[in-house]
Length: 218
Image (cartoon, rainbow, N blue to C red):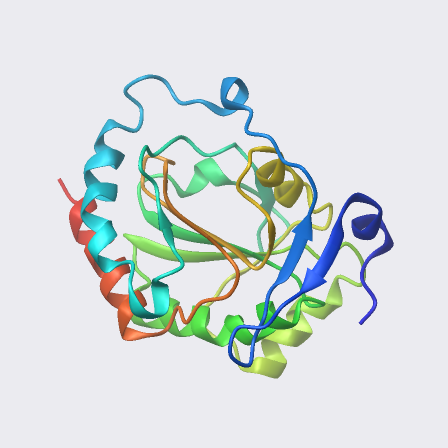
């Protein structure tokens, strides 16, 4: 597998396995720049109430999901929508989202994509969306071709050909490798974090997401 040269210059990687999948772990130091990304003191107050109820659901297929003890505002990353229009993270405010960063050269990412598609088809609505962002830095036709190959029908293809979204999340202490999934509430605050693949189409995942949607309602 040939990884993008620009990516290799910035990161070192190793591959592990989890069942038939593993995840590409990008090593290297990462610091949390709280001053740069911190929310206003009360910005994530309601998010705390949601997060407090999610711990009991992070089990089974989602046991690796780290529920935020103190939810914080997400860095304001941006990527590109299917029509080539900028799609900042803030444009998803008002709904629970599962942000997933992936690449076509990442084998576990490819294996996880049908699971994310299943989750979106089952629970996607004006209250919840899986936001899958491809960070391939070359050959932009590959992500779309992979969606067609895997029969992905429910996910919207978002892209970040600069991979800046990954590097910003790495700098913020959130990204260790690919795939990366972050559960974010309607206020733009992080509820949960998972570095590595998960069975997002499983009953355990559906139960957790459904509860998060319900808990977020006024």
